[in-house]
Length: 404
Image (cartoon, rainbow, N blue to C red):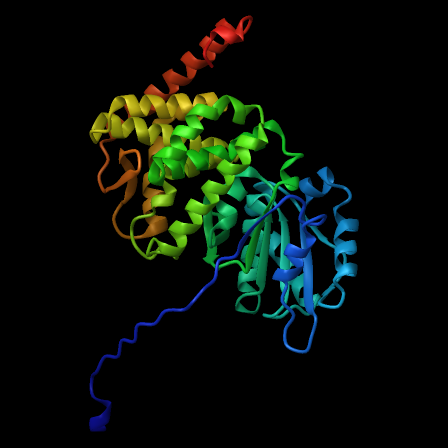
């Protein structure tokens, strides 16, 4: 054997620059349509090719969307061209539960002759962003994806992230990829038709990131919970914006954008949330499950890790006043729920690593869980939820005297 082919090692570290583009608009296909147009950069000597994808629930709530999209394309025809009418995809978790839904997406990309300089603009809730985003990530090893999140949860959290995927093997996000979107536009107009349930669901993620990173934001959430619950947009929109900024800052500057390390701070409260979603057949919204998961882990930290119990009480109270129940019959199946920790570990690889709270704004990583104390935490959260329900029923004739 040649002496030049002797055993050797070559390690070449390298970094790839990415840009996260986040915009906030009042009406992205109306008065602010130039914001979207400016993001759709033409390739050299050609107009940009664009394919729009619409969440079916959003399309039903905003029936004028297709005509507004065509009007937008006509106005900016000098720099972009639609490849056809907007494509409609099933909304909600159903689109993530059917892996075969990816094939029609890829077929449409191919038929439209999209390439790596083309754009997929997806308008929808987090599940639709995840599924269409995953299809875009694997077509040509990555089409340019522009997300227009239409739920508070997606605007405050998942829509500004770098993850996408679908559910497989009854496991949340088992199949997916990391892919930085070309841009994200958080548009206030697209939130107007959300149901009360879906509108409130996103604020659990705001509570989560506030507990991890911003004590002042947590104080604001606690102080304005009744106004959030009544959809006071003068309060809600700044909180959504701050939550999105905190999530984006963590991804860009937290040192682990593609989650190669064992810790996943932004998944605080999610080990049980993901399991609960699956246990309920995804009847629980992701934000509702996250609220329960945050409450459980915060109470556990007060029982096992030295967190001031008054902080745990405040977290539970804040989530309750925001409108979250914090209880579900499936919480009674503790052995099944606790298997969520092992599924969470497998998703990361390596040893179990859960983010918990030491103080507000001071997260900590733990690698071992006292299952008896975790069971106590689950029951304590359930008891708090039952007490809150009883208090609301008792005070309902005179709500001004309840302090809720």
